[in-house]
Image 1 (spheres, rainbow, N blue to C red):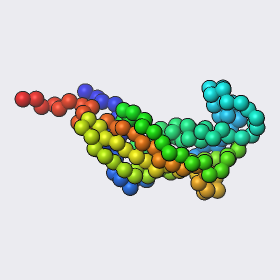
Image 2 (tube, one colour):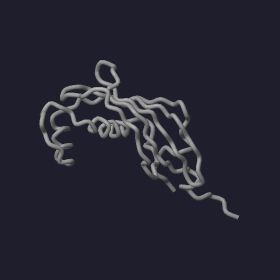
Image 3 (cartoon, rainbow, N blue to C red):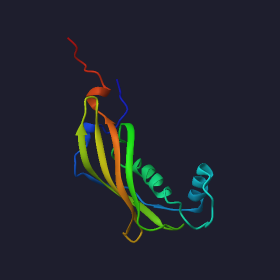
Image 4 (cartoon, helix red, strand yellow):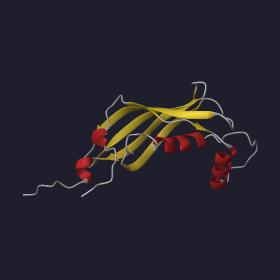
Length: 144
């Protein structure tokens, strides 16, 4: 009786902060992104605006904490503070900002920053998720 490891709504503590490992942005990242999105390549050294956000999501999967048990991605508010170039290195910093319990899950909002190799915030915003509750995900062992 082994359930997949995951971070449920109950596991989140408001104020908890996490930092991902770093990643250097390469021409290959840009080529893969542009191939998927069809975005034109006017400047080969430029990093597409949304690529760092996409990559920071993947960097989050390299954390020690098990991944969030997400029922739905509800949206985001996002700001680009400056453009990035191939060869720059990024990591992300996140802080659990808000939790609101619901019947079978809970809304979780995370403040998220993407930081360059100089420690400057280059993108930032807030992500909103609907997370599963552990109690809703696994039925009680005792039934009467």
